[in-house]
Length: 253
Image 1 (spheres, rainbow, N blue to C red):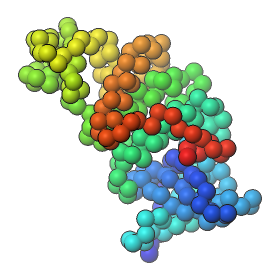
Image 2 (image 1 turned 120 degrees about the vertical axis):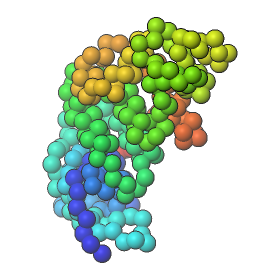
Image 3 (image 1 turned 120 degrees about the horizontal axis):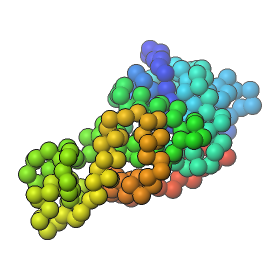
Image 4 (image 1 turned 135 degrees about the horizontal axis):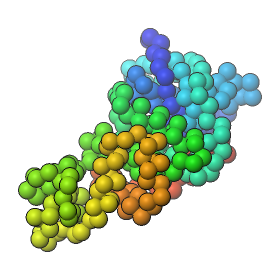
């Protein structure tokens, strides 16, 4: 039973017994992992704040093939989240985004690109001037893309022609887009080109740049997020977990 180690982002934690906690964390090297931190609820726990939600830590754990929960041996805090985690609006937004990550990620399936995206979104959100709405839209777009559920919005869903540069865009009921020549389709409705431009920006910029450029365009952000949530609901077969309840430690429950 080897010891595995990795950088990780703590997504959430909750009580298991009088002294222990279950911790859900996303690692750079091993993907999504769930484990038990024994004694984490004790006053003088060796884990301290290293397993607080949205903190970045270096973690080591034992993993048995026949057991779903790993045994967390140590967690060394690398980046604290005390400031941002004290903001209710941040907790609400990232509890939802963390739940999406948990839903779409296969356990123990590493994804370096996804890890960097999640970490960059949290780092951007630490700036109080950043738009949490813009960061949320950016996260949804990349979560759908990297999990394979994002329709191909670079091409018309009907004729296959390139979408970028189209003067008019249609939105189809299957969540694909229609070019200006296919707007006659009965299941197509108009989609503002500004909304498509906002989507393209999620694919070409960093979370920080996207937040800076689009934080004032709340209309496009809201419409794009509504579309993404419908795609997510179709992918998971149930309503999107928009509202997450938070316990006193800021953990989603």
